[in-house]
View 1 (cartoon, rainbow, N blue to C red):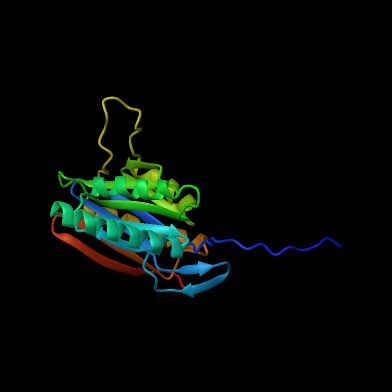
View 2 (cartoon, rainbow, N blue to C red):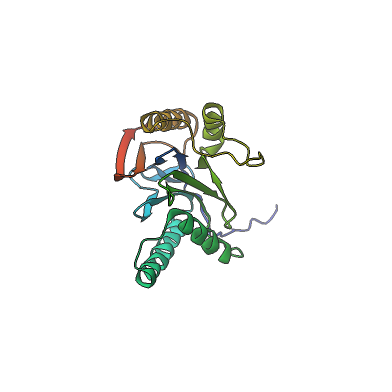
Length: 223
């Protein structure tokens, strides 16, 4: 009989899906509220979306303890920035700070997969997508988390972002108006929750535009 060895891991994957879509004058960031471990649901009411600045929001899936540590780190760095510069950090600046923060921990990474969305200095929507060690890209839309393999092809089919290799550089923002983008997000989550057991219960949708930040919710399947 082979000897069984108990393996302990500092990481867990709490599942869930995140989506962000950038438009001409808005950004929609959404995530479901289910937090799981294995086949157990820990809570059905956990927000994966964190407001980092007035025009900048982050949605994170992966290991939620690491996500919470990352959010606290970014909040502290942002507070220092505000005291030094007497203004809020812009969304592209926050995107670079997040990349640096993740890369600094690359040998024992934050096990978090993030999408950052908001408005840039010109008031246009912007989305940045990340891996766990800080490599990031500015895109028109992105998805992360356990349902991203189901959601990303759906978004590719509906939005068809231009290749970053095209010259002259094309704008990555999507052609949809705000209401259409919100409807698309609701559709992709309703679809993903049918197939992914870690996505469900409720979707939290955050809309960032010139008027500020507002939240919407839609119920998903509970099983």
